Image (cartoon, rainbow, N blue to C red; front, side, top):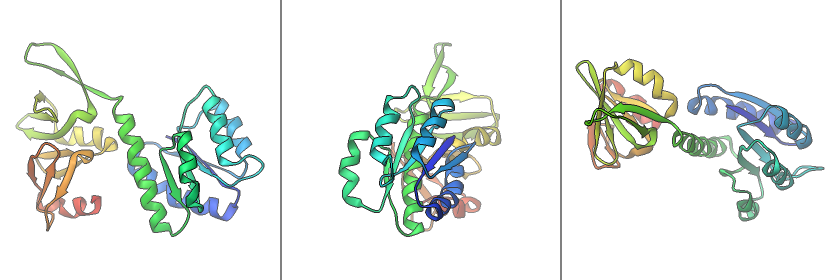
Length: 233
């Protein structure tokens, strides 16, 4: 994931990079971050080697964040926009550029949480474009969007994949293998026998003893996984 951060205050630019880098690595397998004090230089680089995400301070000169967003929309390579500003009244004006999020400048804890929400949204959009292939009951290969998979259960030498619409697919794989493969897409372990899709967890029981999924399924959280689940939520 190639990320550009644009801000005309050098100290703040460095602080933002330091804050953003470890958060981005939680959501994407590969992260490369470039920083710019000048939006025009970023646009030149984007034209030659496109960025996936551009974090734009709105109040910059000579080219402000909105003008830069307009130019990005006219370029061949599309990217996801995150606006950055201390002026919250600009949030409604920013909507016309369809940003993923509007991050408010301020305390690092709040900015960090807003960047997490931004990256989670981006990852979910990317996951809609990813499919897993299964052999269905008619012996046909079926492509299932990753976002449709709610949980994965280990069953002897197989894994069972449960979808939001109640279907179950089976593949001969190990839980460890699939945990490594799907961890970057928001799947995480709650039990030695279960992986869940973070996007479909709607409730966590007090004491981190179980999680409730969007379908209504209630899954036990293993004792050794409770701290990991607590950090997630």
